[in-house]
Image 1 (spheres, rainbow, N blue to C red):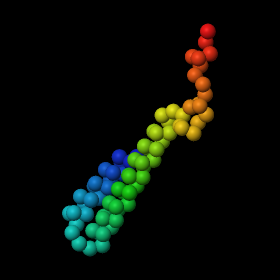
Image 2 (cartoon, rainbow, N blue to C red):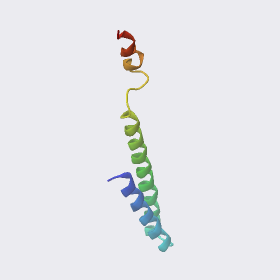
Image 3 (cartoon, rainbow, N blue to C red):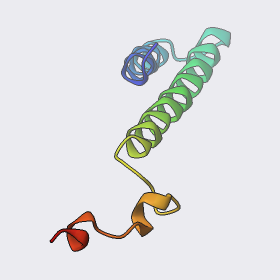
Image 4 (cartoon, helix red, strand yellow):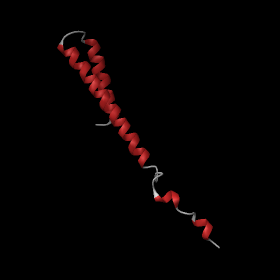
Length: 74
């Protein structure tokens, strides 16, 4: 399930928890809301980290320290 799916499910459980105002079921829906929102935040963050890694070589890579190929042309 994607982060957006977990976020949408969290919103649904939040709305359901506002409709049920007391009892065990209300607490279950609130707990589900918190768990789903944390899961969505984790997946959003993981996707951002994955996208940032795919941008190109990082600063620790040897590619940043190689001389330019243009300087050796005659």
